[in-house]
Image 1 (spheres, each protein chain N blue to C red):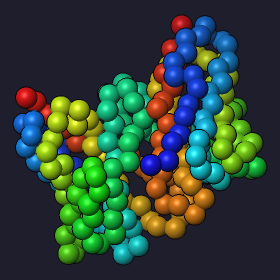
Image 2 (cartoon, rainbow over the protein chains, first blue to last red):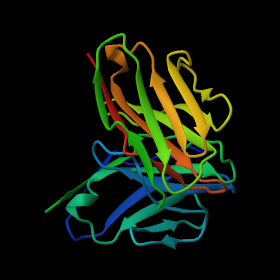
Image 3 (cartoon, helix red, strand yellow):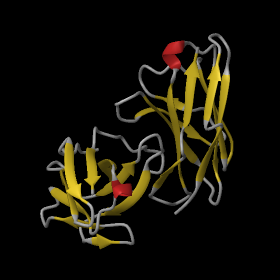
Length: 112
Length: 115
């Protein structure tokens, strides 16, 4: 699976949008982009995933560039409870037996 | 989203004893479950892939005789840490993918402390 590069940490003010970037310049055509987050001392939580179209759900929006070499996770109105480590992972579709491999992620700190 | 549970949530044991951790997919069937380990201030590291009805596949450096994995049904996988030592103290997290699904869901984790 392709590697991803994320900033180590980011800060965001409560109520503002948090935009978390991810570079995946070696992504191949059949790899999805997944975003998970891990709040301290909990298991990772699925946020969103996409292939090439932008995606939105109740938690976040995912913007993938046209060349698919980078993406941005957007939390539209960050709250204190969004403080967590956010992981961007790329994975080939259709391989049920293949686990997600985690990098170091971005530590997002939301403050009031 | 799909729910994965783990039991116990935390356990303290003496060095040399064995500890069993259960992972269940509550509202879906999973032919494949995954076990991860996370040390403080580090990311999750994949330990093994557990397939229902067959032997688990272990990642390089993970001792299969020390970390016994059993995946007896489509909703239950267990990880047994045998002869635990203080260096096995860690946060163990299981994960599962539904039949035919793409998204991987994670349990809440089990914190193991070996004294």
